[in-house]
Length: 292
Ligand code: ADP
Image (cartoon, rainbow, N blue to C red; front, side):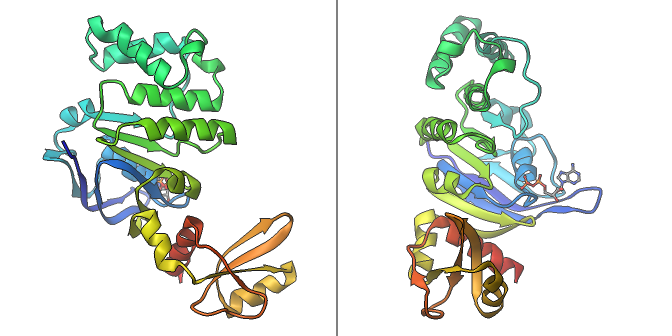
């Protein structure tokens, strides 16, 4: 069964006047979908809305033929959610907690032990199953978060900022785990880390200030910019001049030197080298264009 999550004209303004979502429409097919945007873009607001935890002001969300905003109970049975803040970690072992959550999720008692064991093994937590959750590292907590999100064979999985704060080894492990999750379900990964999306996602959207700026596949988006990204090492005191005269899309430090990336059809000036476009270039040029 191929499932599509269809979001149409979703808007949300908080009581303090912040417009967190502004007419968001997205078509999200099965597979891994990356929702990329800076802090404050509205990602968590969107994730909580899709997870039926928050009401939008207007718009609609359909999962196949299920109305997500109305049929909340039915959606919750098909949903696995790993929130940004997973809450307080109890002084319970991973195995005890997962068994408890499995019972809450309605896994029949006869299948509970087997389900919990399979998930602990899948998330590489079997050897640590007797350890208390409050002693887990950040990466182990995130893997436990995925184990609980996978309970009940979900058709829609929402993971909000899963790799923020993970060290490189833990992040790689987490990526490997996510990439094993079925291709036949919808997985939405919300993140401000471009590499999460380039490593994992076949489809993506970039959002900022509550608006969708770009949707598509990462490879296609990179292709569109190919040949038009130029790089140069600049002195810190020269930076302002380059920013005035060129479309500087990003500035970063590399081995202690300032490297700028510039968007231009032709070589912008002497000393610029054409670089292979990466998703970061797509991301920063998209954000820059929207801010201009
Ligand atoms: P992201 O997850 O991309 O960082 P959020 O959805 O958390 O973005 O936030 C989007 C905007 O909405 C931000 O400006 C944030 O400060 C604001 N916001 C989020 N939650 C609330 C809330 N409960 N009340 C008021 N403003 C909020």
